[in-house]
Every structure is written in structure tokens, then in C-alpha cells.
Length: 372
Image (cartoon, rainbow, N blue to C red; front, side, top):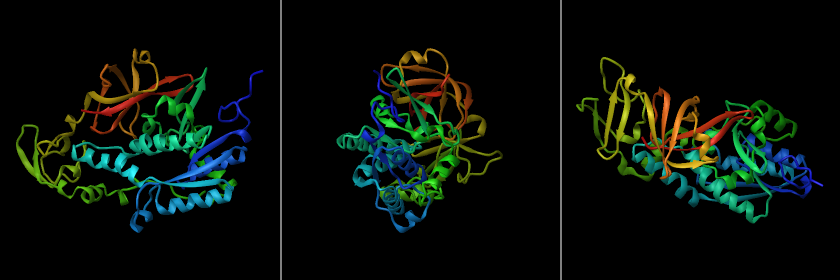
């Protein structure tokens, strides 16, 4: 007789199933912990201490600050679940902060949230969860995982305004089989209502907005702290190669930027290219921002390559729209993406994530890092 799956798709009764919940101290992960507890699962909450925050950092709208750790502890006490704090400051600096700094110095625009998921959250926390003999690692991400015929796929969340699939493209198939995302079919207001019904102290807590280790969005100050030598003056050139200004450091610029260039012209100028080797910025009119062809590196696939035989949809920034494209995969873990319509402001260091629409929604096929 076939066993009946529990609510997270495991062949056990809920009370016989152990889950680790990644608790950041926000409303989403706290609600997930509450849901798992109310459904009868044995819950172990784990909160990661990722950096040594100052009072200034803690006061801003960020995740994983000292206040967040205290909030997670209060939620765990309220739910009467086991709670652990893992001190991952060194792992986080090596895997996320150092990468963030080096990426900017190379003229890229990094996404530390992807690196964080790829390293300390879905790698290190994944291993800890296995060591604790948990049946699943459960998170508060807004994304769906759907298992059919023992094959798990990732889909965009029901709430497209909260969808976090872009940040999870580097998840491996092994991790995806072990992860659970209970909020993928909920809207944010529904999550908060559940938190209120569970009487959680974080029910009305504002969402984190800034990168956790970047106080008030001032990433230049973070780079200056770790690499004070990075603020070197260089030339600002136009498309003809003429020097039309001087900048104070390439880390102050991103592709598509208009404000802060401090060069006047008869028409608005945008950052078109950042040459880290020459320490130069190339600027020009908006009409030159559009790109139809993108080169990708470090591809991660969640599906078979044959799903790329036809046109698919891609996303080239976290807040961007889905774009029609043709993707040509190579054997060197790279790819070429040809967009149907040119897109402005495509920046090296950002991710290009692949999607395909089927009967269940928008399936995540994988993605890669934009090279140029």
C-alpha cells in the first residue's frame, strides 16, 4: 500500500518528520516555522550570524542583523521549538563579502544575495541540516518547488511581486530535492495574516530592503573599508574615445547609470562600459545602451538541455521583466543569449536566469552570470 505524503511531500507522518527552518528573524521565515510547528512537524530553527554589525547597520532595514537574531530567538521561544545560532562570519566574509568587493573592482555589478544562497545558506546550512538528520531544509523564500514522478522543479512564486526565483537560480538539483518553500503559493499579505494568527512578534515587522552588510545602501563605504586603494581617479571617455571628464573610482558606477557622472553634454549621458583594466568609464546617449546578445559564464542547469531547443524567457536583473530569447549552451559551461528585442542596462556581474512557461507556471531552467 502506497504511503500518503505529508504536506511537504515526504512519506512520513508530520510528527515523525524533522525539518530545519532557516530563521532570519523576519516575518517570512518566522511564519514558516510557525506553520511547520502547527502542522505537527519536529522543528529545529537555525539562525545565521553572518557579520559583525554596528548600531548603524542594525538600525537600517536589513536582514541578519543583531536585532533579527533576537527576533528569531523570541519566535522560537513563542513556538516552543529548538533554536540554534550558527556563527558564520568568516564563511560569509570569504564567500560573499570578498566576492562582492572584487566584483565591483572588476567593473561588475554583483548580487550578494545569490552568493549568500549559493554558499552559507544552501551549502553550509544544507550540510548542517543533513548532519542533524533533518528530512528537509525549509525556508521563507517566495518560490515554488513542484515534484512529479520523483523529479523536482522550481517555479516562480504565485506572488510575482515577491518572487525570489531569480536569486535561487544557482540551486543544485540535490539541494532542490531537499529544500521546501511553503510560501511559494501565498501572497505577502496572507503570510502576515498567518503570523498574526500565530501571535508572532514579527507580524508587522518591515521587510528588509538593504544588502545585509551594506549600511543604508552605501556600498562604496563597504568597498572603501576593505579596499581603500580602490578609489583611483581615471578617465571618462565618449564613444569616439575622447576624454571628456575624470572619475573618482570605477566602483562608483554601474552600467546604465545616468546620475553622478558629472559630465555635461547636449544630451543625457549614460554609463555604457566600465573598463577595469584601464580604469576607464565609457559614456554615451541612451540609444547605445541596448543589447541583443549576452555572453554568460558559470552556467547552472536545473533541467535537461533539450528544453533549450526552442525559444525561452530570460530575466537579466532581479526587478526586470521576462524577455523572449534563444539560448545556445556550450560545453565549456558558458552560453550565448540572443534577445528578441534589445534590453537596456545589461551589466556584467548580474545574473541571467532562464524560464519556460508550462501548465504549472513559469519553470526555472537555470541561469548563469553575465560576462559581457
